[in-house]
Amino acid sequence: MDRLSKRIFGEIPYELTARNARVVKAFQAMPYEEDEFCIAYFPPHPMFHSLTKLLRLHGLFRDEHQDFIDELLRQRCLRGKAPPKPGEGKRAMMRRKNA
Image (cartoon, rainbow, N blue to C red; front, side, top):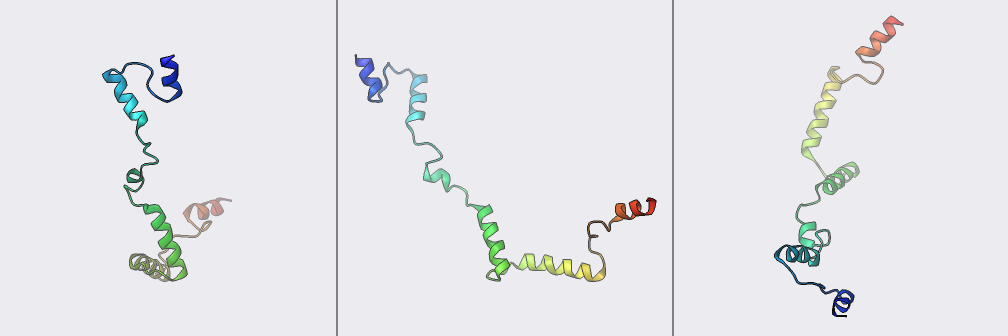
């Protein structure tokens, strides 16, 4: 009867050994997914990245490094050094020449 009452009320129905105590303690602790410290240990970089891209798209955030990269790409396009568009590359030209 004692064992049944312990199982009903969530107590351990048998004597603890050193091995069992560790397992019982692990199951009694708060799960890592619900622990606020574990959740907020690393900042949410992917969310910040997508938000800054969206703000930059709307003109509310200025990313100087991305502006610099865009300017370099624009200058390459003006010089004719940009990557070819799909269907205008070296393989496409070879395919057209052979056909």
